[in-house]
Picture 1 (cartoon, rainbow, N blue to C red):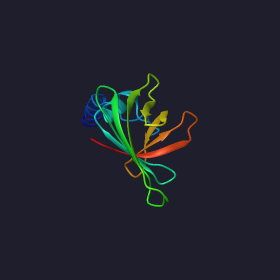
Picture 2: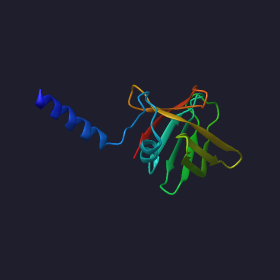
Picture 3: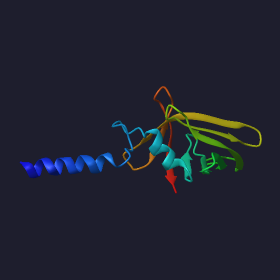
Length: 134
């Protein structure tokens, strides 16, 4: 019995020393999300088949590229610069200034079953799935 208590205590101490990646719902907490996003490359497949990719620099800037999907009648490629941050409430926010338009977002990031991530609007609807690499 004493050994079991010691093992439970040791496990609790080890677990407490590691930052939690999620709050139990798959939603990444602010610290884990900041660590994940800083210096990472994010790739998303948009609903229309276009692909966007950007790199989050540690200083809060980003460099982005978007190209149209294979089913599009016209071919294009865009480049843009912007900023990213993790808001006080833990949402991942970004701004990309393209040549003729801008893209802005804020949302909750969750880890999904395939090992990737998803960005959800504040209302909870899925905005896009993301592949994040360092």
